[in-house]
Image (tube, rainbow, N blue to C red; front, side, top):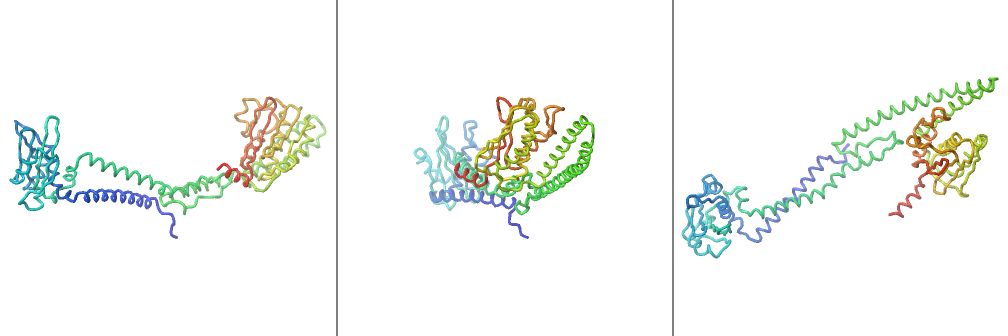
Length: 460
């Protein structure tokens, strides 16, 4: 099957070809503009190259002007036997090579009045007839040079560059660099678009998507080994998690039967004091097993998304727990609106979260005062008591598993942890609100999808 996603190498090749094509076109455009401005540039390049080579290499030795025998001018003269050079530095005149007499006359006539000019030497064959004169302003004097007799076909790339002024060369290079940088900025988004689909899919994976894997068809060819290794790692993690979940679930189910048998035998005892202690221990163990099963049910089955009325769920939970709470010495109350407060989630899990918070208040609020359950219109449930509150030392690990105030405290330390896991599975959260006395826990559910879309459009 043919792949629809091109490789990164192909994308990179196309991008750099485009960049250099833009640079090449820019250079051609500049050259075309220069040639259109002056069609004699190429023909006069030899004379200009000789002048700039001489200007850089001329040295005064024992009152005379000399050129090095191994310099650029000497190498150019070796390839062009007809190369000639004339110069005037202050009051000193000098010449090199076979200077045409007509060129010498023109130089004598115009050297003091011309800064830069091109001229043709009469009675000379092309391309040796072309010549050029340039005046250079030195620190203490003026240097005027004229040269000709260079065949342009003997010039190399370095010889041609010497014929340009450094400022012009730098300007051209800076322009090419700017165009290349601009082309790179334009091309980078097209290059990064190749890996955007696979990175977005990886970022979208969550704990509830244990069976999902990255699609290899969305990955560029160079990233296929990484994508396959990532998927294989997810397979191993999923297998290990499934094994551990099965183990915990099997242990919890296996404990239920002996716990039921122990409960029946405890009730058959005649001594009431021993029966109370055993009943309390068996009750705690039974509650722990139930919470372990709830945790595994939540992680294995995930959310069964359907509308849930928080008012109805809170009313049912409070009706079930009210006798137990009043027997423990508390007054219970429910404050809820007269209309349904609907969220999307799993009803049994939400009921378990509310039950855990009420049970936490019954166990730790001191056996007196009120336990108030408040349902807000925006998917908020508060469970408040009038007990001693949460010790500051316990706050950092309040929602961690098996976290209890002391070793002798009632409960297994899984209630608040299970509540947090339930809320996270529903896209919400649970937190302890700051209060002057007692403890108030808040369950906050996300708004329904339609309401979230409306809020996002309103913000936009």
